[in-house]
Image 1: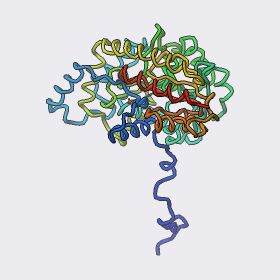
Image 2: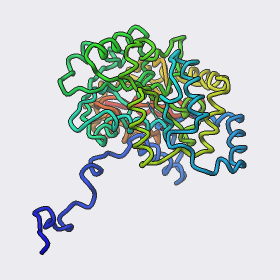
Image 3: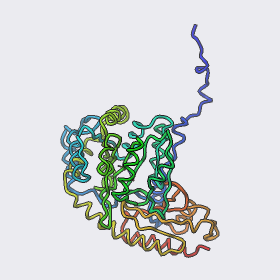
Image 4: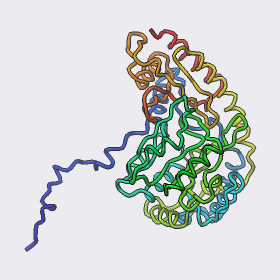
Length: 413
Ligand code: PLP
């Protein structure tokens, strides 16, 4: 006779179709805004989208050429090691030394399907159920979802425009509990463009070291900095942290390679080994041809990113001065990435074309409907009351789009 346990009597029909774990994930708000703007455009509407988180430049030709050559070589039609091509891991180690002054061995590098996969896998490797992740807010929209999916508990630590959107040690210490396992650190920041100074990085790194808090530091915007500031790398500022620090990075932003899907993590050997095991079951290697393209990118010069930086810098100044000129809008000048993050809290509760501005999400909805301009509301990145505008779009579109916002917001009662 077969024993029937309580568990096996549960009827499939009473179970939810989608697991609670997956049902709890929110759609990426930034991708959703971008998709809505593209759909309206496809329907013939003259929408200007400030939602995209990607450079508007093509990938540099030498990288494309390397990929074309790689396509023709049957060696690249095969699997590579799950953790990445040895040549790419070497190139990443060399680039990490060149750009950050951080000396690592290729065995500490793992190549992922974009920086996004590196985020999720790192959280999966570090967080047990109930472990807390300190998350400075405003944060990139993927961090809390990836942390929750990995079983962790994101704990937001908010820093507003009066602090340049940067948290400090006192705030982090106030949020620390016995369950705190790690801190997510992102400088230059998506969504605010904030860049922590080397002194600030050092202070936070030393605090983390003192309290045994791991640091996951996302450096994907390292080359997009303005006004002569430097993006300091956490394990370089605090070398003793290397054993409890994971650096995330990728080619997407620096080389205009968002579609190629190459990112990586650099960490201590046990974490890298664990992530390699996870990835060997999850996705195996990143597309071989993309990895060859990334080798070309990382072993080449940084001329293309210098040209992009010039364009972004010009657009940044234009956008911020135009936004800051709007009554009720306060826009600090960001020093990195390609986003402006205006504070619109002064507009909440007021009305516009007969509708109450109840939140920044509502404001973004009105702006899309009335001015045909797509913005991402602060709710995607933490507290309401803010908007994110990417300045990775053509100069003329940028001016036209912000002018439309200026004209509309001039009508706020
Ligand atoms: N980290 C940050 C802060 C980002 O903004 C992004 C992309 O928007 C990524 C990581 C991941 O980039 P990708 O997965 O395209 O390499």
